[in-house]
Image 1 (cartoon, rainbow, N blue to C red):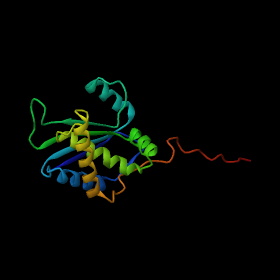
Image 2: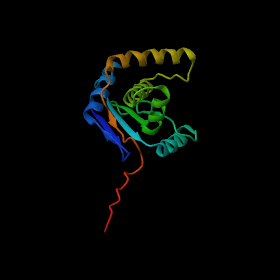
Image 3: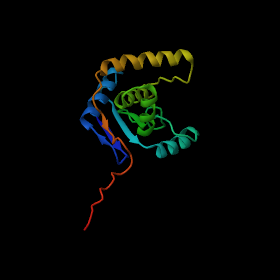
Image 4: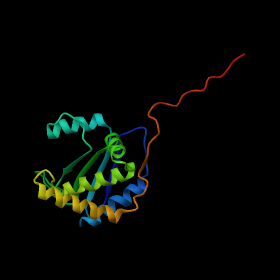
Length: 165
């Protein structure tokens, strides 16, 4: 099994070992321990473009999942791609009173379940089924390790002015 992690954000410290461990735990929990998974962490602009292109929705979203096994030329080992918007995850975490790492783990689980055929948009019953499964997997992951570190402010550090004589 292989996990491919791509970060398309400059101001983010990604703890790759922690991500790898969490991804492997999620894959094992869904019965896909021998599968390959690609995870990409991106910004809202790129996420909006992907959402517009693939879902015809001209807005950002938190997570997109692209299943390889549903494609015309499935690759047996590659489960698919999970793409997460970190800025959206940050906003959602703040709105819901959660840590960013909790939110990122939930988005990863949510995306992987989509790759495994779960679809909360299909029906209320399917949404409940998916939510229960998410909660089961998140319990296995706890305590969720630190996955990323983001600066407290997105603005560049201020320079101290020096007094010259």
